[in-house]
Image 1: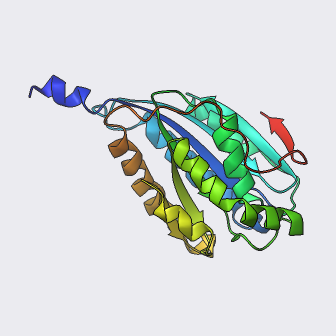
Image 2: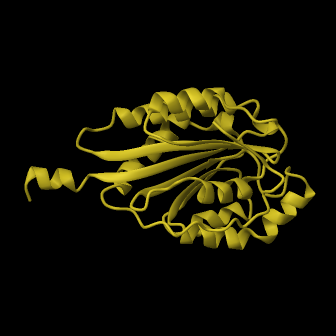
Image 3: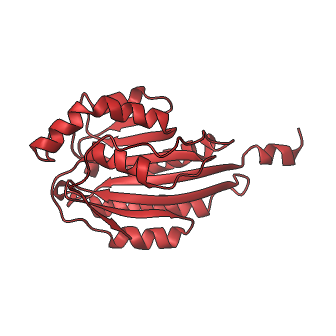
Length: 226
């Protein structure tokens, strides 16, 4: 195999969405999470030149009150500016609903490798209000099915609980459990994530299904598009 053939095998297409808990409980660590994500995104522009990845990146900041969405961009600088300025109205978290929203509302490319990276500091069962917690539990199996059918590769970083533990059983998913973000080495964590993204983009990603319906009732959530 020629050098050019080897390089061509390292080409790929990646769509990456960060799904970030912006609820009140994240106040003490949200700026640190934002800064490390910004560093990760900057590293995409300085990647190995032999790793020719056509990437786009977006984010959703969420609570149980509102979602703030920035759709896919190819500009690391613009992404970072939007993320730095984004804020929600506090409240609790509704992580299952935010995952559901990201899968259905972002314009994922057909042939891309699809990455959804979730950061939260609360398990399913605390916060969110009684109705949203119940809804999250009752429909969680449907959410797992939706993740699989969408061909989205899920990365979960947050507390352990019986529900979120199931993310680790999904095909090509990753779940890293930690109850205290102040103890997380984000440099190592996101460096490892970057390598995983690069290694996963050695070919075409799975095709995305037609727009999948929402699993959860998100009608009470205010959505702001940046």
